[in-house]
Image (tube, rainbow, N blue to C red; front, top):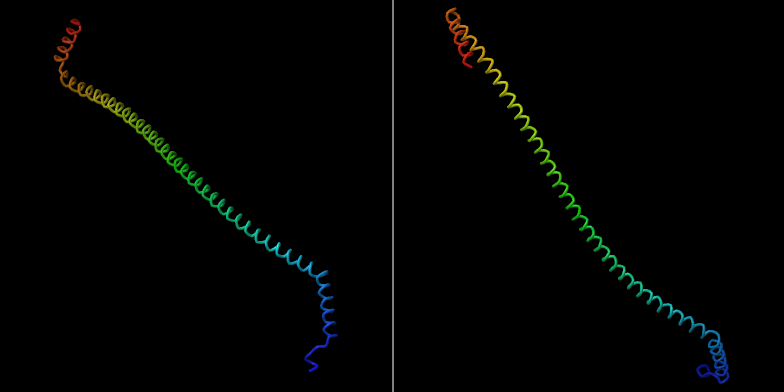
Length: 164
């Protein structure tokens, strides 16, 4: 049974070696390991805090983006409304101007028609007068073809002249 039970010397040297390793680890390795763990814990905490800040910033940016989009849509709607109003005004002005031009053209045409009418009536009067003179001339020639009738007609005209 000597293999199963350790000797006192072995236990002493094992305790001495363990204590020496424990003291060396405590003095030289334990503080840097704990410091490294604490630094890592701090780094993770800062990373989580930075991630939360980034998430909050993203939410703020999304809210700002939505506000900017709403404002842009509102401005677009206002511009579209203004454009429609301008278009309607331009169309109304064009219709008014076209109506005015049409009225001027119609008025000018009516005046031209009236001028043509007056000219046609004047020409008809002239032609009727010419025809009347021709007809009267032919009638007088026929009536005054005899010499006695001519003398009688001349006497009548002279009597009318004396009266006037």
